Length: 234
Image 1 (cartoon, rainbow, N blue to C red):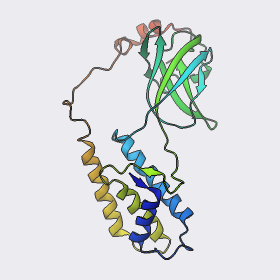
Image 2 (image 1 turned 120 degrees about the vertical axis):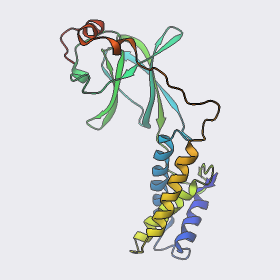
Image 3 (image 1 turned 60 degrees about the vertical axis):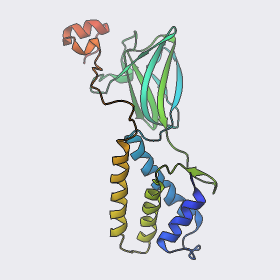
C-alpha cells in the first residue's frame, strides 16, 4: 500500500519541486494525484483488476424507474429475487425500448437500462414491475478521493507509479516544460498494466459460453407475444 503522503513525496521528487511548497501546495498536488488515480481506476476496472463491488437492494413500487446509489460507477449485473432464487435480467437500450420510462406495459421485468436523465442516474425496468418485488443491482462504486496523508492506494505491482508519472506531467505543464519522455513512461506503464491483467485469472482456460436467452431466438412477431405486447413498438 502507498499512502497519499508517500505518493505526494514521489511526485515532488520526480518533478524536482521539493522546495516549491508555495507554488505547489499539498492541496494542488492532492488534486493532481486524485485525478490521476481516477484515470488508473478506470483502466483497472476495464481489465477487471482490483475492483470493489457493492450491492443496492431495490424494492419496486410499481414505477418503471428507481434512483441508483450516488456512488454507482459501473454495473455488474441486475437480478430479480424469486423466493430463494435470483433471476438475472438482460440489459436493454433506448433503441430497444423507445418509450422508456413512459411505457405503459406492466408485467414481469426481463430487461433493464441504467441512464442519467436530468442529472439523476436511474435504473429502468421493462416491463414495469409490480409493487413489492425485490431487485439487486450489483455494481462497482466510484473511488473516494485520497484526502488524509494516511489514506492508501493499493499499488500491487508498483502500479502507483502510473499515478506518480501522470501527476508529474500535470505539474510540469504548469511550467510549460516538455513532458514527452514522461508521456512515453506513462505509455509503457499502461502497456505493462494491460499485459499483467492477462495473468489475473489462471485457475482455468477461457471458455466460450452461450449467454443468449430464449427470447433472443424468437422471431419478432413471436417475441412481441412473449413479452405481452400491448401497443408498445420495438
